[in-house]
Length: 523
Ligand SMILES: Nc1ncnc2c1ncn2[C@@H]1O[C@H](COP(=O)(O)OP(=O)(O)OP(=O)(O)O)[C@@H](O)[C@H]1O
Image (cartoon, rainbow, N blue to C red):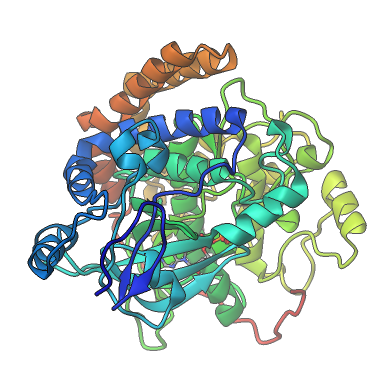
């Protein structure tokens, strides 16, 4: 192995990768301040579970050239590098003022066919499972852990990110016009992902983060079923029960985010992943209440690249995927959490018929259609769909945000709360109460009382201080907010129990999802 590594020198030898923590002189002072704030937030958020990792990370700081003998190298690799998560969750800017850390060097000993592996520590990339505009997503394992549970790692190449950022300017007002366009927006994605996803089974769980010279690595729970988008393509459309099963879980995820003051802004079938379940019934298309159908079990919302904390209920940055974007965003009006309700409406529409509500090749015509709420329940696709489903959609795809359903109203919608498989076969003879059951909202009410209020008001305060640029108070208020979210045992435990209950209702009769013969080719 090569020896005598010098400060800030890159080399790769014998499968070892030397990664100085971060390129410098890439950001303005203002950028760095913002990054520091986000990194501080996240660092506080991480401190409860990553202190061991951080200790290990610092322990492999080998301000070179200190590796004089092969023995020392062996010792270093065995005892320190192999230790679990030694580099994960470290934000290099945290250590910029620290002389020793500034010249840190980090090694990876894992060989792989993927170039992204060379600067990644502790995890082995197994195969690619997805890609995005700026990223590749891999299935990976933590080689240092005993159980070797697979995870997903989203790898974002800095070069593409920063070149886009250069193209689109560095101004704060431009900072999230496209995604992801700056280091700051990636740290924002991570901070929000970490904050909202803990102990919520309907949000893809954040596990860790690494930054190397060339890449950002976001480690998260691996969701093995794939995207709901692909299921729509495969099945053409979902039964109303299966659509309820999917959209209810999305709605619960969104409710959680909204209560934490975060708007997702990119709700679409590609960002809904699912845990697979067996196919039930003779034809494999039976729906089981509390379990799922069509191979779809738990549904999990992912991709927090456009998520934003909004305090005053309005934001102005245009973003999102055009087909699923709410009209008020095009009109550059301030917008609120209600943009996610529009996204939910687009997804629900798509689940039930197999194509999105607004389709137009010409982007300006598409924007016009969306701005006017110009969509239809076209025959024959919508002929067999209930009026209750159409009613729910029309409350979600309401152009005027003040009239649009909010998340609580949607969770209380009668259609959402009445599964076909619970209806007796002689439905007309039965009073509604016989087949109705507790609403998801009723079940969840206990989770969103004072504790959620406290979290929100702590966040409000940190946001105001941020706006006043009161850095010290901001840092302390924000860490208080994150501390509260992290340590609210009741909030955390109540989620899992009550949410499980929400999906453990009795199955009385199965229903099948429809397979449409004619394939729709709007995409
Ligand atoms: N945790 C995960 N488990 C399984 N697959 C995943 C996971 N995260 C992402 N993927 C897959 O990788 C794809 C891209 O991930 P993601 O949407 O986070 O990337 P992105 O760069 O933000 O994409 P986009 O360009 O759509 O914004 C997902 O659509 C999904 O298929």
